[in-house]
Length: 70
Image (cartoon, rainbow, N blue to C red; front, top):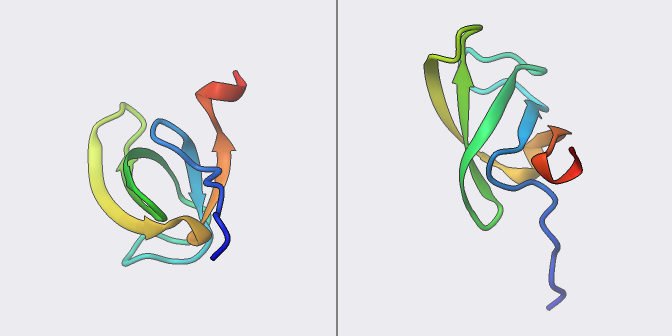
């Protein structure tokens, strides 16, 4: 079994690659927790108030920004 390297980590900003509930494809959020390939994504408003939390697999996310690359 091959080891898979994770590219998305806690505190990364990500973009949804498909619709989740009423959140459309392209909506951005922040990874607040991770458990292997599963990521807990916080969707927030313009002031930073949490609107929703989604449990999403890494394959359904696109990395937008990472503090490790800043």
